[in-house]
Figure 1 (tube, rainbow, N blue to C red):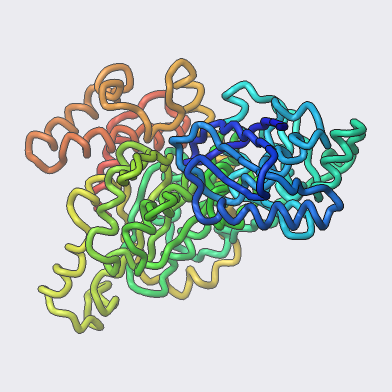
Figure 2 (cartoon, one colour):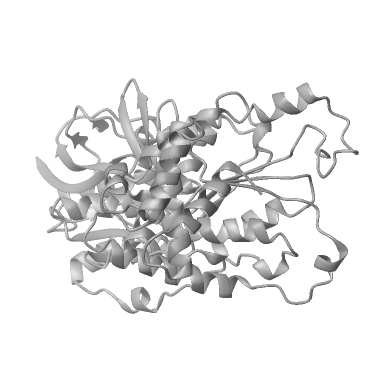
Amino acid sequence: MSLATTKAIALSGLSGEVITVEVDIADGLPGFTLLGLPDAALNESRDRVRAALANSNLPWPNKKLTIALLPAWLPKTGSSFDLPIAMGILGAQAIVHNIEELLFVGELSLDGKLRETRGILPSLICAYRNGIRKAVIPLANIVEAKLLPEMQIYAFERIGEIVHWLQSGEFSEQRYFDLEIESSEIFPDFADVAGQLPARRAAEISAAGGHNFLMIGPPGVGKTMIAERLPSILPPLTQDETLEVSAIHSITNSNREPLSTIAPFISPHHSTTRIAMVGGGAHVIKPGVCSLAHRGVLFIDEAPECGTGVLDSLRQPLESGAITISRANGNLTFPAKFILVLAANPCPCGRFTGKGYGCSCTSVQVRRYLQKLSGPLLDRIDLRVSVENIGRAELLEKENESSHQIRDRVIAARAKAANRFKNEQWRLNSEIPPKALRQQYQPIKAAMNFLHDELDKERITARGLHKIIRTSWTIADLKGIERPTLSEVTESYRLREGIE
């Protein structure tokens, strides 16, 4: 009897569990038994591994083969167990040695190649947290692995190369260090937007403080243009933020480049479902678009056309910065800190603008249309802007402020906020907790008196008061003022209430 063990990772969302793969080869009728609650894709690994070894001129034992994935009570899913199973089989035959402390992650093709595998980055993070420092992965996933330099990564194209390395110790690291990518993500520039100064101002405040905002206006006035250009004025992601974002996109079908430091921009169609918005699934729970927009922008055009409950499903992540999905087999929490940008027409026909002469909708239709944006959702929106048709003079303007100019101001404002919060657990004005807003981060007394009067008159809620103060801090940072005055608070109030 021969026995070998190695390590693998069972992912559940972004979290994972280290799996010990035990392979036993014993005398008896040839057979293959896989233990440990494998799913259908994992059960099929027998034929993939067998063909991969045969086509790589590596032996397959013609004996009783038993493979246990421990802990046995934990369900295992996916094809990333192909490589650890194959290496365990080779280790049990004494073809390779010293594989007990190595992490193997990868799917095998029938010819022995290692295919690109989802979830490499969260798998490596899980392994690192559990004390594993060496991992073998497919070469196609090496870009993701670069985000975790603390681990010693060995990337290969074929299983035969892994065997050669384990037998001889020869490994060419040149491929690892020479592999570089350049981001191909290019967002449009704000210089393309003619006029619309109030909406541009709202976008700048939103980017500087991480505030949500709503644009209401007729079709064709530039609402989508402004939203699409918001990532171009956001600061680049930090290393930790890049790690968070890439880990989420690693377990989905996203084509986002792992090393990209550009804030993600996600724009689902208004016909999307609640499951697609927040995440879910029957067997494998996957993140929704609100998690894919983590540290970036979630833009929903034609917001009132969304199905019942779709927009309201965002209320929890907007408040907590995370989304928890509960299923019979457990609960998963995905991060979801994003800037929500909504765009809506003023009425069903979209022509209720100016004096409203071109609108064919009744007052009841207009009211019902805008009521699709529920009060609790709108209470979580910091900025509301009316976007009107522009004139001929604005269209003929040759020089509009570029994204680069706006971005410089946004970065300066965020740096000012980060310095103010250097001893706190948050970095953005939109993240200041209510207790701190009522104590050390209050505006001046005259501004607070104004807000308390509005609160007493029931024109704003307690959440509204806090959001107005947060936005006033962002406006003050953009102006270079140390503390919000009545002017900044008044501007924040008017922006929240949509007052021109």
